[in-house]
Every structure is written in structure tokens, then in C-alpha cells.
Length: 163
Image (tube, rainbow, N blue to C red; front, side, top):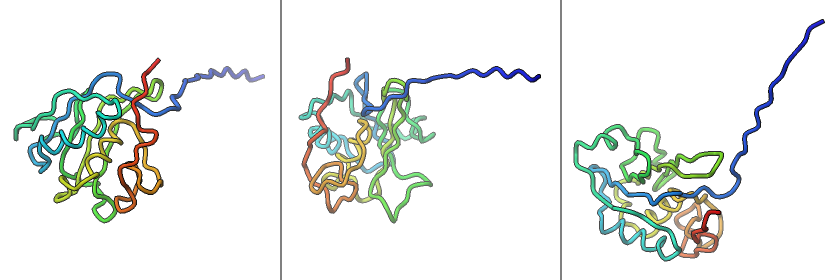
């Protein structure tokens, strides 16, 4: 008679909106045309909703994180598009690293199509992804997946205090 022993590992998966548990700094890679002033304007939208940001700085040309293409823990990096950027489909793209058990956002990388860095709502929208928000299809909303259908509506984007 065969005896089988099974182990079941149950992981509690986070089902809410991921959020930063620490205040993220913003690093603008040297190759990006985004300026510190433009980033300050973009985070104004999010600060008005209770979100916090630390230092904003432009990286030197030899910055290792930018050269490697991956932000360090606690950083929102703004860079030029990488090889996997879908130029025909996107003005910007954001990759966010977060813990699936707690929802804590650890780091994020925003890539913006050259020439669109100063366009209204592009950086604001991508910062929304870096904060943990997903695209939606609400006409006039900041997180609308289509720039032409987006706007400044902000329902559901307020900072929520963690328990």
C-alpha cells in the first residue's frame, strides 16, 4: 500500500490596493527629459489627495540604478523606455514591485515615451500606477487607460491609512 503525505501551504494574498508603507523618493534618470520641476507639478496632484513623497532628484550620468534599469528599494525611478516598451500602444509604462502578502509597494519604475514627459496627465497617471492604482475606463478619470479619455477626476485615489 502506498502512503502519500501532502503538505498544504496557505499564503494570505493581499487583495486591496497596494500602497507604500514608507515615503518614496523619486529618482529621475539622467537620460530622461523629465525635469525636477515637472515632477514637482505632477506630485502636487497626488499630494492634494494625501499621498507623500520624499526627495526628488535628477541622477548623475553614472548612476548605477539607472544604468542597470532597476530602482532600489524605496525609490520611484523615472527613465526612458526600455527594450520591452510598446511604443505603438503606450505614452508611458510603470512597473511596480510589491509584496503580495501585505500589499507594501517596494519600488517602481516609470518609463515615458520621449517627447511626452511634459504633457499634462501622462506623468501624473504613471505616478498613480507607482502608488499602486490600476487603469480604469471611467471617462475623465486620471487613471483612465486612454490618455484621450482621461482627465482630472480623482474618485477612489485618496490615500488610505493602513491599519
